[in-house]
Image 1 (cartoon, rainbow, N blue to C red):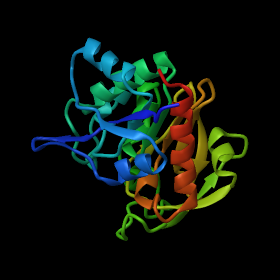
Image 2: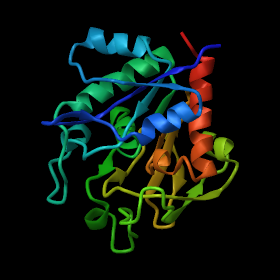
Image 3: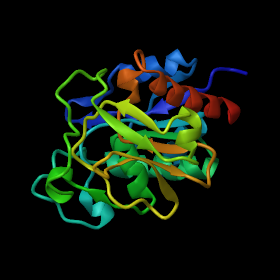
Length: 237
């Protein structure tokens, strides 16, 4: 068995494509081969990208264009990355068709839900309520800032073996209502959705926190990447 190839999406700006090194460190740490997926617009080429990887990792980034979930821009919406949403939704479509494992991280969890027909909070602090706790920590990325409750019986619970973990947190948007094909698998005490997953696929999970940022110091983060890479290895082309 060879090492599975994991395609990772990037941040997109006028300055080009970029990706924090933590993603590749975590993938390589579990003996996966990280490769950068450069945005293209041709459907045939996007399908080729999926054909040539064993697993898809949707990375974090800026906000999602609200028209994709039927809303106008909220006044608290932040910067978007033009072209990225549609590209990643095509990647998800073709990865699901091919049965490839998908791990969505932060923004990646949101675009996974939106692509499947779910909705989002454009800004949790103004739209979710005054009881919303701080979800965009000022501490370093490897600091575990708050508790997340894992729902028993889910794939995420199977992976972690725990009903409560601590995570880092860097977001002001979040999934609101999960798509019909997804179920909530983790929440915070203030009822913000922290993870969604598919019950129809072997490994399709979106998590709101950044396990790549805590991979070197946190066992739960290692378990998530280990399970993802294992799923990709089992479904190699």
